[in-house]
Image 1 (cartoon, rainbow, N blue to C red):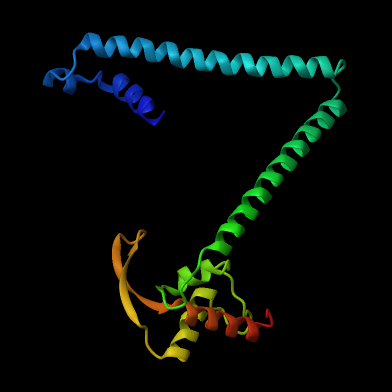
Image 2: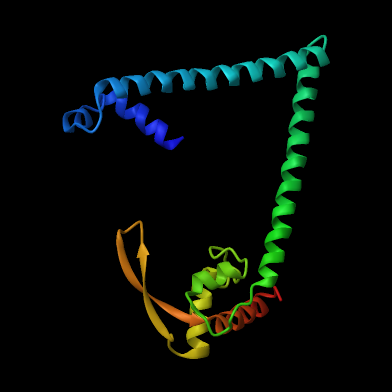
Length: 192
């Protein structure tokens, strides 16, 4: 679908003049493809319109006299059904993920950043567990705790800072040490 969108944009912007000039394709080939693409686009659009019209027709059959109250009831019923279906899908996916996580053996001696460790344990790294005593977030607290436990990081690695457009060195710690640091912080915060 993305390729078709790019074709549409390029065709309407400059008609693929560079490809025609290079001799890769002819103007007739591009024009023929564009006609087929337009037919496909209008067919999809028409299909969507017909599907929507059929849904509206079903609603008309179900609700003979539309009042604001009946419309609101229908809307709430539809939203509730969809919400329940989405909730069931989310629960099914969540149970599948938990089952997979349980089967994956994680080596406590593997190296990772404090941020990745916090995320792996399912904690929002921006939360402040010791607030108002400390305004440090989970990531910072785990880093401080790791330095107190282990002294210095075991390794350093480059990590990209996309907002700054550069790479910086980050500390890598053992997964087991990160788990210990998180447990210590939870105990201090009264979350254990």
